[in-house]
Amino acid sequence: MVDSTQPQTRGPGRPPVRSEDETRALIIAAAAKAFLETGYVRTGIDTIARDAGVSTRTLYRLFNAKEDLLKEAMEARIDAAIGGLDAARLARVDPRSSLEALLTNYADLALSDEAVRLTRLIAGERQEVPALADSYRQATARITKAFETWVRDHQTSGFLRDGDVETVAHLLRGTINEAQRQILLGLRDPFTPAERQSWVKASIALFLDGFAA
Image 1 (spheres, rainbow, N blue to C red):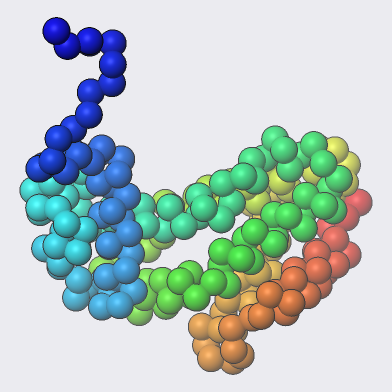
Image 2 (image 1 turned 180 degrees about the vertical axis):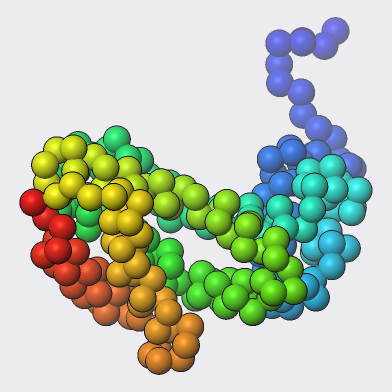
């Protein structure tokens, strides 16, 4: 008699079936790699499916269109970079410390080689594929919300002067975006970790000089 309370082991032969989440992650990783290496337009769905080790039928079951893959690839990178910086935690700590944490994590994301290459790809191919700009906006909505939430919370606390939240948040985020722009235009080499942190501290000083109450 078999003891049904004991865990059952799989015999040799067919490998364990991947979960849907694991399959999605494999497809997203394969898509991100292919887009960066080949370009969005020149990358076919069949190539992504092959590199992920799945059928095109499976890919289309999990993703509606190629632009969804780009959006989710960006979102996965954003989650990895700022996933721990929830607005509630940022609002509870010292404003200057929370601002440094927010800008440091955003700089780590925006100034990474992958982000620079992806931004260059979108800028270069968005005329041919207008949906790329929409995918970018949707993917980065979480970053926009994080900056706007920080500004709104600290205007409410009195740390910042009153002003249009969207505009102030855009200007704050722009201190890091300018660093990315310089890399994109070939005006400077990628930042070293020390240079990146120095840029963050200068950005904080500049922003607070203009907006601190």
